[in-house]
Length: 357
Image (cartoon, rainbow, N blue to C red; front, side, top):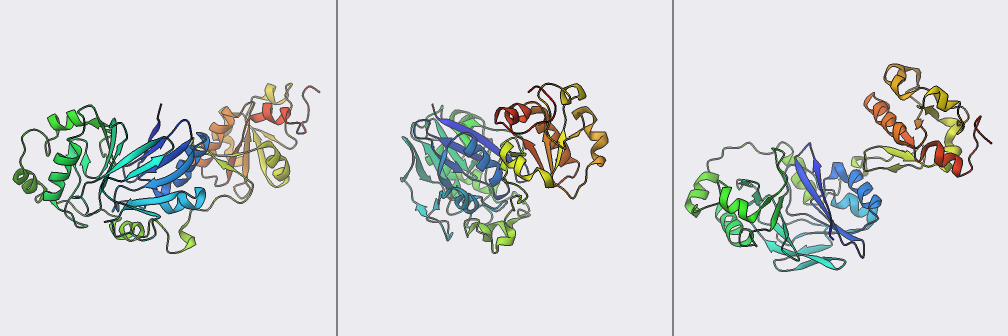
């Protein structure tokens, strides 16, 4: 069964799609977002995948691609349309080519209209297609900038996307209403711009009278995406914490392993969020840990120094993960959760105070 995840960036309302082959663990990521690269990398790691390539459906105008940043992390190839005009890609795709990931592949369909270099990626069994900004759910992408052409878009959608099997699921690069997926049959029946018996002249007239403002980030995003997301300077890169060896989780927080915590503990604040009877109980506690039960943490967070990193601890790592998120929201910049909690700490033989010997 295909490994498939639909990911969302709330700032730009962008969908990214992770597809993986369960046998070889090779994967591709479609339309990654620069600001979400850390999240996406965590998911790739947690699912034990090898990111073979990132694919952009087009040169986006509303966000910067995460392709270059993920390449730095994983060595993944950068691929997008040969007609995009972008520099720095490893592979420039043309109509009819295949992008393989393990035993599976995506077939490239050129679908210009929103931009000259728009692509649609069709899964090998035609059960899914990823339409970028060409066909949206009950709508279509714009055609009023970046070599947009409503005539070309009409034929791309009608001749190259809506001719796929009726049951084929269609996944767009954006949706602004919370819709996630549609199908060829649905769009043929219900899409007010592209469905039914609509003619080319109707569609072109509709698109030429939208009167929409340009995307707010267009002047930043387009030049960056023409470099495949490569920043003009390293100062633009999001920095990983350097106060300890940490791992970012797909759940959205940093974790530290027991060995790393033992090594770094003297310069950290260790906060044990278990109840007091657990703190004094059979698992024992980490030397120097400050007991603040999770239920009391919102009211007592001012007892912690904001200029020293904080590591949260509980029995198994669940409550302390919640505590880490609470502290992040309270404005603490350097926070990590102890992975596996006191159970793992003891199991790996790290020193404890109190508890059963």
